[in-house]
Every structure is written in C-alpha cells, then in structure tokens.
Length: 386
Image (cartoon, rainbow, N blue to C red; front, side, top):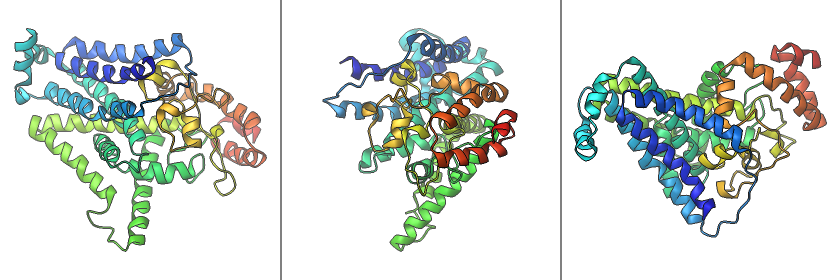
C-alpha cells in the first residue's frame, strides 16, 4: 500500500500550491521558498530509492496520473484569481464563507513580490504537475484517454508539440546532434531553452507533415495534431483573458513560458554532453543522466529513472528500474535545476562528470565523437582532452 501512496506526494504538492495561491500575501512567497528548500533538503537527507516493487493494480497508478489535469486546472484558476482585479467566479467570497479567512483582503495587500512569486510557483507547477505527467501519458499512444489528458496538460505550457517531437523524435535521436533536446558540451542553459524550443517545434511540425503525407492528408488541417495543440493553448489563454483581463492573461502567458522553460532545463540536465551515433548504436541506459533521489522519485512519478526510460520508452513509470550504475546527475531534480541556472557552477561540476563518462561509459566510436564535441565546447579542460 505504501508504494501506491508515496506517489500521492505529487498531488499533495499541487494542492498545497493552489492553497498558497488562494491565501495570497506572504503565503505565496513562503510557499515558493518552501517548495525549493523542501525538494533540495529532502533529496539531500533522504538518500536514494532503489526499490522495485511489484504493482498488482496498475490501474490505480494510471488514475493517479489522470488526477493531474483537475489539479493543474485548479492551480491555474487560483493563479488567475490571485492576479485578477475581480473576484473570479466568487471564489474569494466562497473561501471566506467556508474558512473565515479574508483572502480578498490578503490579495489586495499583495505587491509585486507576491505577483512574481505567484508566476514562478505556477510555472513550476505547470512543469511539475503538467509536463511530467504529460510526459508519461503521451508515451501511452495506445490509450486515447491518457493521450487526451496528456495533451491538455501540455497545452498549459504551449507545448502540445512535445507529444509528437518527444515520442517520435527525441527518443530516436537522443544524445546526438540531430536531437534538439540534447545540449552539446559547453552550451549555456539559457541558450538551450531558446534553441531547443524552436528546433523542437520545427521537428514536431516536420514529423507531423511526414505522417499526414503518408496518409494522403493535408498538412494545414484539423488533422494536424501540432496545429491543434497551438489552438488548445490559445483557448486556455483566451479563458485567462475572459476570467481576469489583459493583465491576468499576460501573467498566465509568463507562467506558461516558465513551465515550458522548466522542461527545457530538465532536457538540458538529462542529456547534457552525451554523444551517440544513431546509425550504429541503439539508445542505452548510459546515454542519459540518472538520479535515484528518493523525494524527487516519489513526487515526480519516477522521472528520475531516466536511464531506463530511454532504454525502454514504453515501460510505465512504476516499472522503471533505478540503474544505480548509470551516469548520475549532480543530485535530485530541483537541486540540479538550481545548479544548471548558474552556468559557471554547472560547468565546474559537470565537466568532470562528462570526462568520467568518456572514460568509463563511452564506446570507442563515442570516444571519437566525444573528442570532436570537446574541441567545440569552449571549455578549456575539455578542449585539452580533445
């Protein structure tokens, strides 16, 4: 029972985020601090989770994933309400009548710091609650319910194209120069966010064009799932405008872009510096950075076990194996995100890991590719090894 319950950490974090957004004022700022510090501290002190339980009722675990859509919808509604000038749908009056807490007064007392913190929290939740779950669901191409929910979760970050590019592009070309999501050695994370976003959307459109051409269907049509995805995101933006006006709509767009940026930061972390020849070498666990940190694993549906995921993309999250001998990230996910956002610190910590990968994980062919990557990296110690 514990192994089913542990994944509800994900839902509790989402509900807590919605709660602080409704409570407003200092709750939002302290909630943001608590979110980051909680992940970093708990990953540091709880150690690794290498358990591999046998789940007899996988349907429960699928329903846990589906819960992400109503939870994320609640979070985004709480955010829109918090940054709006009106009491959207009377939510503030209802909360006060039920709890006695004057959330409308709290909202009025909030300033720029609260608004910025609300954008960051909502962006994090769009990434954590939305994209992580959608990543799992959109791999289940045989399940129309999971695909439907997954695509709507991605719409909050303007990234329904991910459902095409990730499954049919990224998993094919990961750790190669053909993959938009794989960051070459020496790349800055901020450049990667922009580059991967643009190239990923172009790749998704090309993949969808190829699919529709094979079916004899027009690319410019409602059958194009990437174009439909753009319309889905536009629909959510329109709802934000109708609910809270221009200011709320623009702040939601900022939160959605923050959620999309979070995905690209995670892509950056998961495959930075890896090399592979897609024509001669199948994807193996050594082509992804892994981590088994307990809190990240439990609260992110085992996204942490990325090495197994890329070796067997069809395996559901609960059956992923820890692969303790795979290349390891700096720490848990939010810790590594913080490090990635500080490029000098990132390169100082990751350059030795990349060099260790070359020596202990790379094949002979990959060592040649690594030397070429080192020469182009702009990092002195890597260039010396080229």
